[in-house]
Length: 292
Image (cartoon, rainbow, N blue to C red; front, side, top):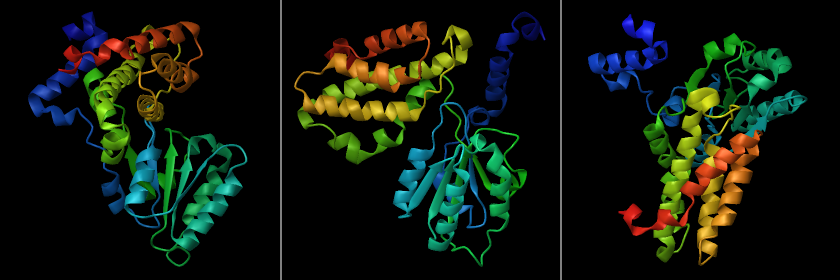
């Protein structure tokens, strides 16, 4: 009661600390995202629904998983006028036994009633057992309740805290892929690549964590997510491999002005973003003392 009276902003953290002390840390940390387990719980008649949260982007994980089980995937980002196209894609996937991904269902409010009808008419008689329908949506009152009740619900909460963000960055699909991580640059350039990759992951964790501080972090909330990190990693590997000397100016421009900066509309936020990036993408990060 004293904490709630004096520091109401610290109550949530204090409750989390209390739960950790009395019950254990696993009760305050979300379980690891297991796409294979969710797929095993599904069938052709039950949609799989991703409930999106800021900073989450399940498409890369879904495409990688589809490749691992050798399934063909067709996807569409819903919006104005995309409903009829989505209906044809669903019908074709039912016939062929493939997967269809309906992204951003919360943007197709007017089509949701038709979508609910389509889901009700999916039966074992008109659908191959390999068929799966995946949906992504932010929490929305317009999303059909019956689809949620009959489907498999999933959410991948963004990491909380700088340490969790950094671990999450290193746990991304691209970095965890040995074929990319071990073979993207020549052996003599691996140390430089790994050092700069560490700086990039630090930067990504910083921009994610600053969102937790409201207008003190960013004047405008931005939806930075894993796709920004993914394309920046690919560009980093390309520049390190193609040039004898690391082109820091090109790296900062592509990452700070295009990938992450493309989302930033406030000039002060852009300046802050570029200052943080300049400290993470700097020659000093390749020094032996940092590597050790």
